[in-house]
Amino acid sequence: MKSNIRKSLGFIALAVTVACWIGAPILPFLEIPDKVLYTTVVVITGELFFVVTVALLG
Image (cartoon, rainbow, N blue to C red; front, side, top):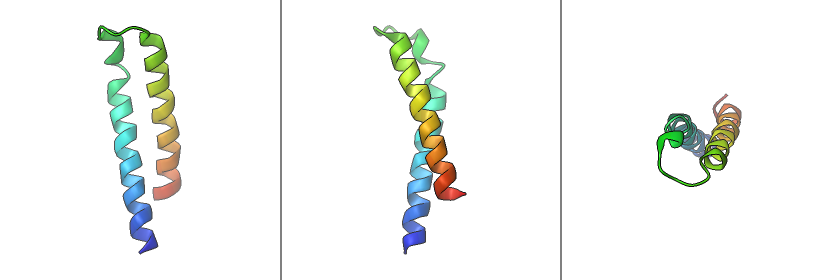
């Protein structure tokens, strides 16, 4: 049971990672204020979730 929860959380973290990596190059082209701040936050979040994914899924 614990392995299933760990695997599910790992796949959720992987989905967040992929979403961040896809969103990071798109953000500079959107009409939003503080593009640099949001892009930086998305990149850092993606990298953190990537580390969590590696830890959970191996």
